[in-house]
Amino acid sequence: MSGPKIPTEQWAQVIDKVGGPLQYKKIPVAKPGPEEVLVNIKYSGVCHTDLHAVNGDWPIPTKLPLVGGHEGAGIVVARGELVTDDICKIGEAVGVKWLNDSCLSCTFCQQADEPLCLTPKLSGYTVDGSFQQYAIASARHVAHIPEGVPLDEVSPVLCAGITVYKGLKESGAKPGQTVAIVGAGGGLGSLAVQYAKAMGLHSIGIDSGEEKKALATKLGASAFIDFATSSDIVKDVKAATKDGLGPHAVILVAVNEKPFQQAAEYVRPRGTVIVIGLPAKAYIRAPVFESVLKMIRIQASYVGNRQDSEEALDFFARGLIKVPFKTVDLKDLPKVYELMHAGQIAGRYVLKMPDAE
Picture 1 (cartoon, rainbow, N blue to C red):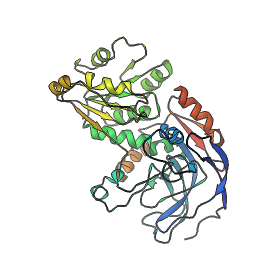
Picture 2 (cartoon, rainbow, N blue to C red):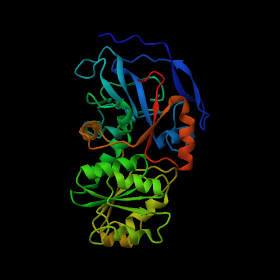
Picture 3 (tube, one colour):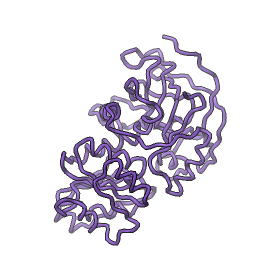
Picture 4 (spheres, one colour):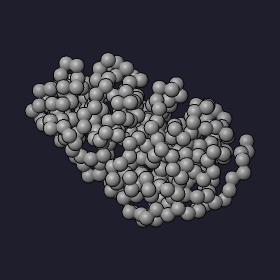
């Protein structure tokens, strides 16, 4: 099946070296390989991971030059010769996620742990991502966006939403129990609060500032702790639970190290600490004596697999998740990074591509 006419050049945000600067310029439009699709990106969310890609402060080397972005929502306009309609259709709305491709044959892929693939391709990191008008992705790994879903609002779900949904699943928290969400006013945290509510959980939002407090409360947090004004964060978090024993689970999506050191102290006995955020060069530390006596579990959670992605998008399609976002043009990406550096973003920023409608 042939698709719409595709240009040879497109606008993109590109870095040629670690640390930037970003260059808003025209680059060639790539052609999909045999098992790939070409997606006309309409909107792309901006994740803190994208800033790490620019700074090069993670121990995973990026490709250079690099087009960042991994929350791209758009329309399939071309596909490789091995891609059939049952895999991906021309004209279908899809999402380009962090996991751009995996081998589907290693021991992890065969157990539905494709994010742990031994040879993954990562959008906006090891392959060019969604900060461009046309992006390449594996046909088997794009997220299939339900019909009628707004592409601007759903784009942050493709990473932030799926990731926190996966973390909540991994925590084992049951309906009626309480989870603390550290970084509740940010891009991931604001979605975690909503997924927790949709899954029947109570949530305690932990963040700082009146804007983030208002956002977390509006989205369903049953309590809010401002870490900047709290004199005893451990005591305050425990006090916010019904029985004073602390939350059943902690979802860590903070962007600095200190909260990762505190969570084990306020999670309840037999509770679980889920590590999701990736502050550069940070470490997890917990008091051994107290951790043993409380029999707590500390577990990391990465991005979701394809089934997790489908489930997370279904929550959104049913109207249970509302993404707090602001839209700016693709050319304004540097301004978003400046706000990230300053810690001044509540919710998510979404980039509008030049031809988006």
